[in-house]
Structures are given as structure tokens and as C-alpha cells.
Length: 246
Image 1 (cartoon, rainbow, N blue to C red):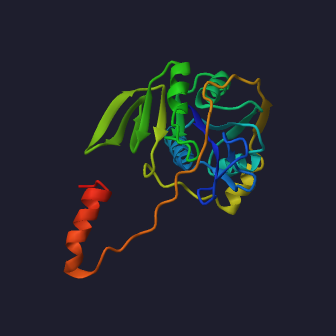
Image 2: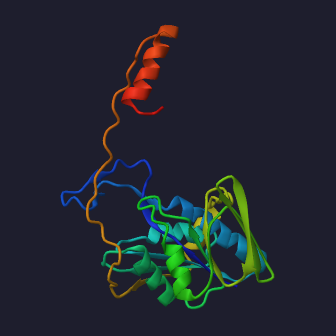
Image 3: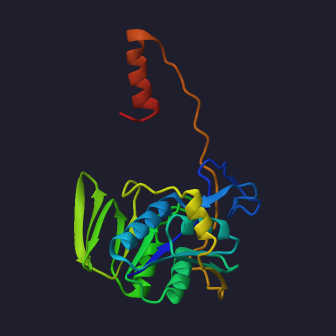
């Protein structure tokens, strides 16, 4: 089975984000970079499927900078090969999907995280499925693939939705669908011998443009309106007349 897993590079979630001087982009000069956490679940799903049915897992990343260390980590966790598509053009979800679609051929299954934790757009999976001409099932919290068919579940408001269908398909995975594995020393050493290709690809016009970026307003300081039962009436007044909460 031909399995593709897409990996994004994002700032560590503990990074303090500042707005750059142009007012349109984040200042990431001092950011620590990691594999997108949701894509870790996608990678584990891809490796588990390969272990169950055979085939090959290809980890793919699109970006303008070095990602080889992270791709080696993906190889250590079970991917069979990796490809980095390097481009210096601004990248939106459609541009990323188009580059992947042009390189990955006709995969049986594509796995991604449900969204990247930096932009939170969550559109790459849907664009990629459209370009490949296959269905997309997003925000999957449970997945079973067997004999060319799948049963996927995702949480919706107040319920769990179950979707059945046949491959090929694209799946974007939510947290909790599995438990990503850790690579041991043996796997890390073996990963150095697995193929990792870095390909320069043509720039694509971005269809998503940031016009303005600003941090949310600082939260106002707390306020104590009194103590004990005597404060109830004042608290109700503040919630009703000032906060407009009741």
C-alpha cells in the first residue's frame, strides 16, 4: 500500500509570539521549531497501517528551510522514506497541497494532522483531496482500515459521527486517535540509511494573504467587589450593568 504522511514545521507551542515590523507576519527569529503535534498522530497512523497491511510510508514536508533533522526523526519512527519539497515562495494551504499532489503520484492513503498549530487554518487536507480527486475525512478521532475500506469516527457537537467508505482517501487526524511512538537508539541509527530526498520545486502563487496581524488585547485585571454574602448584590449589578453578562 502506498501511504503518504504530510508533516508541517511549526514553532514550539511554548514560543512567545511577537508581531514583525511589517505588521503582517509573526517575528519568529528566536522560535524553536518542531514537527506539528497533530502530524505526529498522522505519522503514527501511517506506520501502524503499514505494519498491518504492508506497503511503504513516505513522509513529505513542504517548506523553505532545512527540515532534514525532523524528517530523520520521522524515519526513525517508522517512515520508509522522506521527501522535502523546498521553495522560497509564500505558502498557503492550497500552494502546499498543490506541490504535494504533483509529487506524490496516486497514493492509496494520505494522512495529515487536522491543522497546524501556528496558522490553525486546517485547509491543506481538503485542498489535497480535491487535487487528487479522492474523498477527505477530517478531524478523525478513530480509524480502522481493512481490505481497502475504512471506518472513521469524528467528534461533533454532542455526538460521534461514523463515516464508511473505500480507499483511496485523505484523512486529517485529531488528538487522541493513537499514541505516537518514541524512537529508540536502534531506530535512530537505522534511519540514517533510509532515503531522504530534498527537491527544489517551482514557486506557486499564494492564494491566501495576511493583510494584518496583531496580538489580542491584554486581559483586564481582576476586580474584587466585596466579600461574603454582602457582595452578592454588587456582583449581580456588575455582571448585569457593566459586563452585560446577564
